Each structure stands twice: as C-alpha cells, then as structure tokens.
Amino acid sequence: MPHDLVLKSGRVIDPSQGIDRVVDVAFDGARVAAIGPALAGTEERDCTGLIVTPGLIDLHTHVYWGGTSLGVDVDAYARQSAVTTSVDTGSAGPGNFPGFRAHVIERVTSRVLVYLHVSFAGIYAFSPTIMVGESHDMRLMAAREAVAVAKANPDCIIGIKVRVGRNASGPSGIQPLEVALDVADATGLPLMVHIDEPPPTYADVVDRLRKGDILTHCFRPFPNAPCHADGQVREAVLNARARGVLFDIGHGMGSFSWDTSRKMVAAGFWPDTISSDVHAMCIQGPAWDLLRTMTKFLALGLSLPEVVARTTVNAAAALRRPALGTFAIGAAGDASVIALEDHAIDLEDVIGEIVPHPQMLTAQGMVIGGRWEAAGQ
Image (cartoon, rainbow, N blue to C red; front, side, top):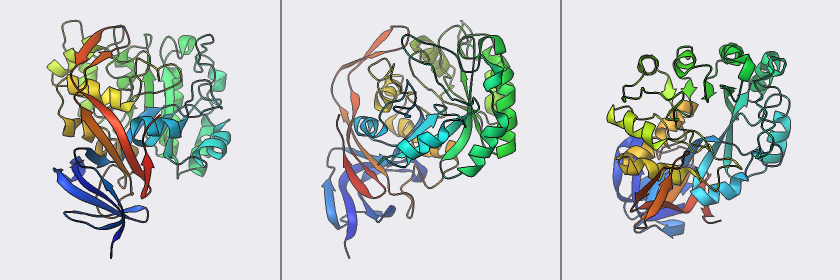
C-alpha cells in the first residue's frame, strides 16, 4: 500500500534520531509513517538536492495579526520561512487571548502555540510611533486571570511570558518577573523572559529562573550582554545553564549582536534554541525570518545539523511537546524542505554590523499535518 505522501530523495537531517543521509520520508494522515529508501506514495514530492528536516519550530514569534500592532500573518510567514510551528510569545494576555484563539489560532493552516503574557492585554502598544512597555504598570499584571486562561487552554498555551527591562518594565523593574514566576508555578508551565536594557541586570533576571525556564534575547548587545567586555561569560549565566535554564536567541529588532555572539561562541557557549522574534517591525530586517537567523549561526561556525537541532528537537523539548521536531514514527506529520544555496548574502545584526556569508538557507516547501504546503511569499 502506498503512503499518503512521500518526500523523495532529500538529505534528511533529523537530529532527534541522529539521521543525516539521503532517504525518503513518508506520511499517513497527520503522522510520520516511515523513513527509508524507495518508499511509494499516492502523492510524491521530489526533494533531490534539498534538505528535509522535521517541521521547523520558531520558538519566538508574534503572530496575532490584526489583534496587536506587532503581529504578522502566520501562514504567510510559514510560507516565507518553512516554519510549521510558530510559537507566539506574549502578544496576547488573558484579556485578549480568546480573540487570538478564535480569529488566528483556530483558522490558520500552520500550528500556533502560545506563551501567554502575564500582562492582561499582552503587548498592546508596540509600533514605530507608539512604544509603551506593558510591564510599566503593575496594575496590568493579571496573575489570577493568567492562571485561569492557561489552565483552560492546555492544547495551545505551553508557557507564560513576561518582559522586563528599562524599555519593557521601566519603573516596575523586576517586579513583573516575580508575578510571572508565581503564575508559572501555579500552572506548572515554563516561563519565557524577555530582557532588554538595564535595570534589571542580566544577572538579576537569570538568577531567578528555574530549570526549563527560557531567557530569550540571550545574545543581545551591550548593555545587558551575557558576557563581559573581555569575552568572559557572566557567572550568573553559567550558573543558570548548570541548573537547567535554557537560552534562546530571539533575534528581533534589538537582540542579536555579532560582537556578543562571537564572544559567546569563543567561550563555547552556544544557545539552546534559535528563534527569530519575527514581528511587524523586523520582518523586513534585521531579523527577516527563522531561516535568515539560522544562516547567521552557520556563519558563526555551527554545523547545519546543529542549527537544525536548535530549531527542531531542542525547541520541542523546551515546549514539552515530544511529538514535534522529530521524524520518529507516529510523530506529528510536519516537515520543512529547505535549500542551502550558494548565494552570497549580507547578514546584519541589530546595531548595523554586516557579516557577508557565501550561502543562505531558503524555503522550498513544507508538510503540516501530513499535507504538502508550497513555499513562497
């Protein structure tokens, strides 16, 4: 019996199983059915010369399009970047999550998972002309409501989000993080924390995080970089990693620095996950999308399988969703088909430094729930 869909003759990279070879991947219904040579399918897609990975997971996005000023169209983004799972990190809080669920999550083709913001209205004033940090006002920290909404939506809410820093929390300082930690504890969910310029300091934040919590924007520029000027990684960062705190890139418009990245790499400190923090103000640069961010880590010397691991199995582990990010038989029927093209590209960071690279990753197609989806704008 032929399988429903087979991706033929691609270079399959599945770090969850140690696979890196030319082979076929088959899907039946919405699940992975087989990996092997010469598989037959009712529908077949020739992937010769292309790279086939488990569905890419962008662990930091903003996709509440129409509901927040920073949201992007998630299906258009998926086609642009071959991302099958976009994880929205705090666009919505408990006050507007029902609209996010009804008008975006339940209507789109690609999968959307959510870190629910502890702020009642989420990130509500983020644009080129209006910038109000939602964590400035402690009256918006909606602990009870966030717990109730998270517990009522376990299928898509996978964590709690909070933003702290001079821009995000201002006079509230680190207090919103304390509220968010209580919410994460009450729900049994991991916490993702945004950090920008001090105060609070990088050390103040990571010192409070628990095993499985995520510090996003982990390679941000000075001030509040994870390392000292001489390249020595801050002791608080090393201690946090030792107790199981996860470090995510979250590139965005202000949170990826070539200088910081080179110092952290030289110290042997790679991120656990790579994400774009794509939103309306960085989708046309400097972040662009997940594939552009992944290309930057190829330029830093990380191998392609290691880059793929940080956008598949590692991201799935952070989400506590083991059926994602793998081609294990019976796993979610998601795949990303990408190319590593010999096309020179200038890779910019958030402060304007350009690093040229001779290759770039591009989207060629994807499988979501066992169905083929074309790539492109």
